[in-house]
Length: 162
Image (cartoon, rainbow, N blue to C red):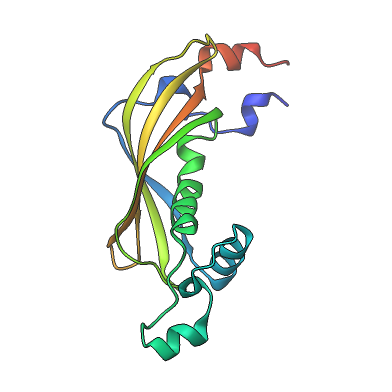
């Protein structure tokens, strides 16, 4: 099997055009598993992310999903279309958490190609995206910019072994 058959055929550096907008295929309902597990794994001690009793007695409503979980899910939902052929993540910038996300919210991702440029490598170029996350009520909940080093088809498809 050729290596290029393992990833998408339309998400190499050459395929991205500045200004292009992408609607990603899947949504993801946020469960307490993702939120509580990740919150505890990174040692986030803000109890509003995992202590249902405290949230109930303070009357604040629902547990708020940790922002790191929210933007990570949006990055994941966008990866198949945007970064499946990435060689490296170069940066995550301008993370903006716009509205709270709670357990049971379903997130959907959209992306925009902001920039593309040559890199110092002949086999890849740099693409900067803005990823947008919306909930099931069509409210913008997060946006994040991601810069990635993306394979060039002209190098990788020709170079892969038989």
